[in-house]
Image 1 (tube, rainbow, N blue to C red):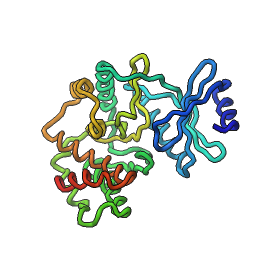
Image 2 (cartoon, rainbow, N blue to C red):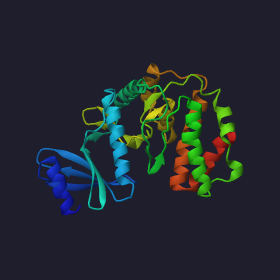
Image 3 (spheres, helix red, strand yellow):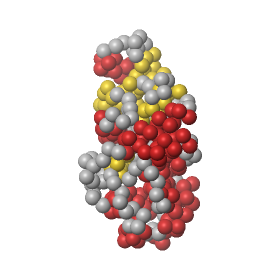
Image 4 (cartoon, one colour):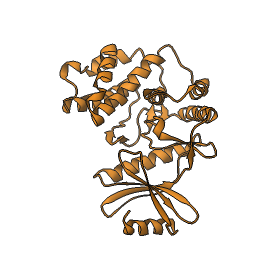
Amino acid sequence: MHNDLKSHLSNIIKESITKVSVIHGGDISEAFKIETPDNCYFLKLNKALNALKMFQAETYGLQLIGKTNTIKTPEVLACDSFQNSAFLLMEFIESKAASTEDLENLGKQLAHLHHCTSTYFGLDQNNFIGSLPQSNKTNISWVKFYTTERLLVQLELAKQKGLLSNNEFPTAQKIEEALEPLFADVKPALLHGDLWSGNYLISSDGTPYLIDPAVYYGHNEVDIAMTKLFGGFGNSFYDAYHANLKKDEHTSYRIDIYQLYYLLVHLNLFGSSYYGSVVSILKKYF
């Protein structure tokens, strides 16, 4: 890390920085652990043109979840640009491997988050899913929101990139007709929006934290679908969650359709290795 940035951060936290360590694992931004004599901080750094917008959206999401008092998020200390980089500075959460009990708490607290509702689906601002823009234009219809703001945006992008052809591409009308019977009585819930295993932490004292959100108001099962896309969070998590928010006869079908959005995102970000999974869901439902 450049000394100028180090001095700038030191001025923000009003502490001298004694150690900076690289943290590996993120594929979008550089990450660092910043140590002072009394505290530890987490820093994300990114030089992309839209990096500051991404970090501002992340800050908004973290604070929106945090304000619900249902599940914790790290405190954001600064979100700004310095020289040719954007940065996000927050508290460092010392984490541990999740126990069965920790996952049960995570499930329970996520259900409490999902009880936070709104009069519409979407959000009062757009944000990002990974590094891709995510449009959150509000709608009172979940079928229309999920069709236009989620599936069609990613399908169109996949077509532009040459990853899907015209004959694999359902029309808006066809999508809406397929979703209508499955999406009855859906209520808006505040979602994390990108809840895979890399986007929660269990602190050393057992407190669950959510990180890297892509928030909006949508169907609660969207978050559950993402948790199951790459292996799942364990039975104690799902048992605790569904004790608070029940499944119904259409849940397993909706999980597929919600995973389709994330698979399309992965197709558009990482390429054709996700093509087979995308096409099998498209053929099954549309």
